[in-house]
Each structure stands twice: as structure tokens, then as C-alpha cells.
Length: 155
Image 1: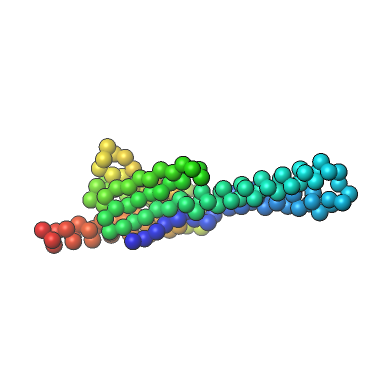
Image 2: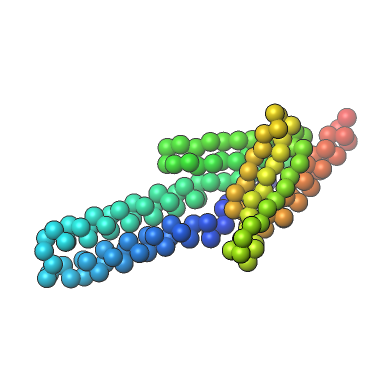
């Protein structure tokens, strides 16, 4: 079984927003003695918003998981804290896999998208922002071939 997560760079935007909000709140709270009470409340609210935003973004990023087992591929897509979508496909139903790396950042940091086309109504499962997408694609196809060979031996 292999577990894949999104590349750390896909979380960078949320981390940078947190850092900016955190710095703003620290600057406001640093001068709390000379600042009016209203500004102190604003600084605390910004700090709470920053921590909440960071926690929410991190959990969404962390709970977005892709699994490859000896029988199927599974995509746990965390949309929000209380909303997730699970997609899965048997390895025998996989018709094709493609990977895509687009842009300078994805090329430089070697991450991208792996699309798995299944036999059921032409639907696909997409692994977003996975590191080394060519390796992930190769692992999926190799696992599929191994599964097919094992089923032929049993027959």
C-alpha cells in the first residue's frame, strides 16, 4: 500500500497568509500599552483569525490523502472540515493514467496531477499536486499489472 499527500508547496499560500496576519497582529499587540483598547481588540481578533485560518487550511491539506492498495486506488478529497468526498476504483477498472506538470513551480519542485481514467462511465480520479507524478503513475500501472498477473496465476 502506498499513501500519497499533496506537495508541501500547495500549502505554502495558506502558510504565507497566516504569517502576514500573525505579523500584523503581533505588531498591533506589541504596542498594547500605548494603543487604544479598540486596537488591542482588533489585534486579538486578527490573531485568532490567523490561528483559525492556519488550522483549517492545514487540516484540509493534511486530510487530503490518496491511497494505492493492491486492489484499488482511493481518493480522500477533503473539501472542508465537515465535508469530504471519497472516490475509489478497482485496479482492474483502470483504463489509462496520465500525469501533468504545468508551470514553473511544478516543474522546478517536481509535483503535479495524476489523472486515472476508469471504465465506469469514463469517470476519472484525480490526484492533485502529488510529488513526483511520473513515479505515482508508474506505481499505479505496475500495481495494476501485478494484480492482473496474480489473478491469472490463481485462475
